[in-house]
Structure formats: C-alpha cells, structure tokens
Image (cartoon, rainbow, N blue to C red):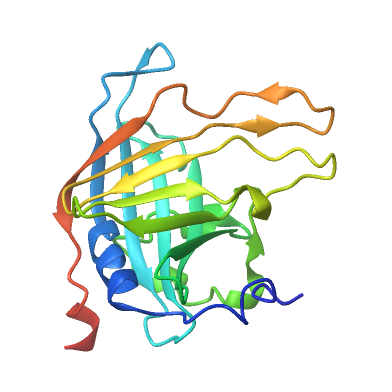
Length: 205
C-alpha cells in the first residue's frame, strides 16, 4: 500500500518552514501541567530526527512516557512533515510495529537502524494542517476530511501549537463506530517546555 498516494500530487515535501518546525520539535520536553485527568503526573516527550537524507518531507521519531515510571512509553510514533504549495504543512502520524523494541531511541538512535518506511502504517490520528503565524508560532488543526470513519463521522478537532520553547496540544478524541463520543487521552491541553535541544548537525560531522 502506498502511504503517500493521498497527497503526492499536491506536496512540495520540504521547505524553510518544515525545517524550522523540525528544529523546534526535536529535543527533550517535559510537561508543565501539575495535574492531568485528576492525577499528578509528569510527562516526558523526546523527538528525534530520522531519515534526514530523504526528500519526501521531514521525518521524526516521537516518544512520550511518564517520568519516573518503569512502564514502557505510552506513545511512540513516526511523524512526517510535508510542505504544500499553499504554504501549509501537513503532519502525518504513523504507528510502528513492535514499538517497544525502539523505546529509548532518542539516546540510542542506532536502535532505529532496522526500521524502514515500508513497515509503517497510518495511525488512527487525523492529519494536521499547520501554519506559521505572525506570532512566530506554528498552529495546527485537524483536517477533518482526512479522518472520516466508516460511519462518516469525523474525529473531533485536535489542536497543537509549537514555538521555539514549548509545545502545547489537546487530544480531542472522536467518535467510535457507533457514533458515540469518545473522550481524548487528555481532558485539558498539555503543555511541554523544551529543556534540551537536539544537534541536527551532529550526525553530519
């Protein structure tokens, strides 16, 4: 199955904005929310650039985990940032087979060496349309046309924003196959503060 058939004819793949968004995303982030869903919890988010020689967009490995918990990461995804002729950026999210095999990849990138694009599959998340605003912040909103379910009911809109120092997103949930509203993973926007930059040029030295 071709993962890119839905947008290949409209994409320009890379741009100054996709490069800037990648720069702001990669690194280590920690949540600033004291309480999430009634629990005191700190979430760590690590984002690593991968496949930097590819020309079909910017590719990232993202891993979210509860800080201090011995459990495996609760979310691992491959993200693709694709520039469009309109100046917007599309963000595609892919699930990873045997994702736990790649846990901790930010500090040990070599574990991703065996992962190939053909192993990925589109996740249930909708595509995000992202725009760089005059406030020097990227703002993303779900493209509901990209996430229609078999019932014809779209997922609820998810928003996120990215600046040079923080990331904020709201998982808005969606509808199940019975048309019933399902809440998102988080009931309030989660904001992350960037505490460590990633050296994008380290691998080229």
